[in-house]
Image (cartoon, rainbow, N blue to C red; front, side, top):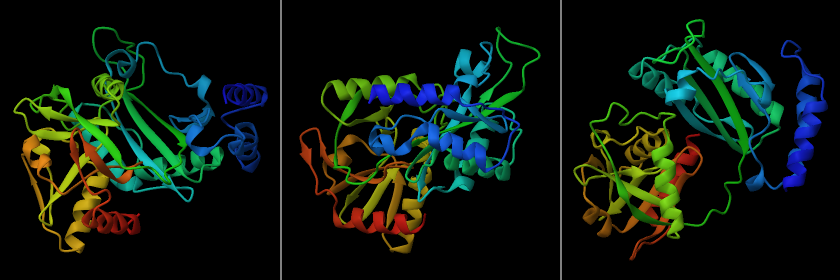
Length: 320
């Protein structure tokens, strides 16, 4: 796999490229260089192309300044979208949340939704991606004690990768020993300052789990390292309220809308781990997983997928 990846990168370097050139020839060169059929979908890396501040360019030529506040301080926001049938899903919802979070962190937004949609479509087509994921990142330019006064107010870039989402088994999760602070200015913000989540996930994986539930300073369930969490008890659907520090996930919102359509009572509130221990079904949601059932939470076992989870999953899939 590594050899094929190196060959693909060498081929993209040999390809003559100008960000100003447009048209189908450019897209075909990208497709030929990437060789998407060479690797199985679940093994494919991020495609070596980035949409950066308005144009496609080789990933290695993305001009991120060493003085970027996004690089130096993690002063940025991002969102991750699923790609199905070659189309990024719910771009409008993702962009609305990203710009709202950018406003909370004082990051200027220089692009409109139509520019982002067009750029995403161009990137996905260039990579020949049918099923996958895309990431939009918006980073602050000049800020803090180390700054370039001539820098742009912000930088926007987009990445994409193939992803195989078929046949994923139910998850085995645990509870993290680390806590989140619901009073933090980053609480509920999808920030690029993401090291805490990655360390939490690494700790769980070292113990043999797929993911970990994080609690806040009051011992309330918040979410997992990269997903919202739901549970079902006596036919009712529960999920942590946003006031716990939970992210307003796009798929989370879709599940709540699906519950309303199916006339399943949905409750957003504060709950301890005791509530999950008494649950009949548990599942996680994010834009690349969709609705993914949990089979085990430490010593506790659940029906995976349970009947409520299955109905919600099918309804959410029909809403994409």
